Amino acid sequence: MYQITKSVTFDAAHLLRDYVGKCANLHGHTYRLEVAIAGEKVDDVGMLYDFYDLKKLIQGVVDQLDHHFINEVPPYDEINPTAENLAYQIYQTLRQQLTSQNPRLKLKYVQIWETPSASATYSED
Image (cartoon, rainbow, N blue to C red; front, top):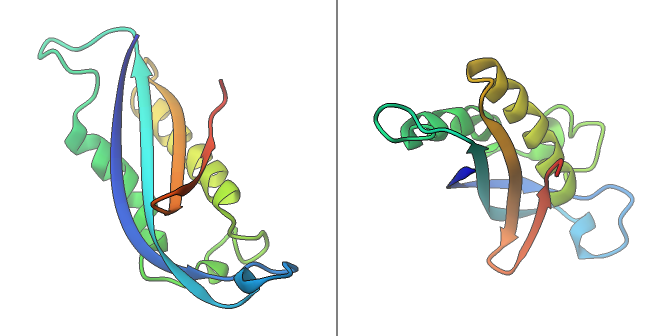
């Protein structure tokens, strides 16, 4: 099984509703989003999936969050924009897009970093 990963960064602000602590206040992060995909075969060029195409796929999700107040972006206007919820929602969006583009590929995981030492990961494995 081959696996490739791509990371991008974006800046956004959020606050956590019903949370007791500093994160209940408006604050920002430079998020790092890491996405991994896997598949059993490479193409005739020797690639599982073009990194350029993976970046474009990820960028479609990131553009909705970058330099925004995440609490105003659906579905985070109704659910808390925790790292766990971001990882899950981004995974669901990318999985649907990836499998419709190329059913032989599998989205392995989405990892979202709020700081260099704190992240949440979602996968269906």
